[in-house]
Length: 148
Ligand SMILES: [Zn+2]
Picture: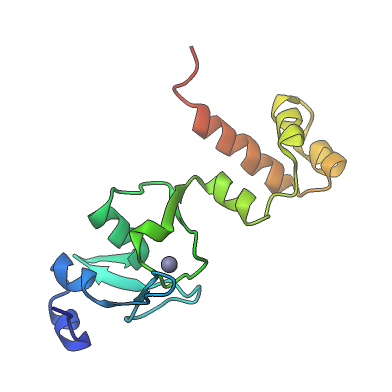
């Protein structure tokens, strides 16, 4: 049974009602969210007092909790909430895929291995200092606990 927007408003603490509130598009298989979307085009919903990005909530309920990972749309449809169209990605993978990192993997390795000042590295590789710091920080976080 498909929920109407009115029943969704009153039953938003019941996950079944939220999960039913989408429109399947058969050609692409996308589940188009019919409720509110944010500026990025992602579906949003308040659920049990927490504001959720809808595809993350769907993914949690139908697959597993993404935690710190991003849910990458393989269909490039932000308001799609079909968990089959969501690939869990780390922040870095997601940025790489989106082309936000202009550094090659080789350059990333050199930067991570280097003890040069961040501002010198930034100049050398043509990126911002913040970019270098983020890179070093995210690397540290992702390798925590893996060292001997
Ligand atoms: Zn989709």
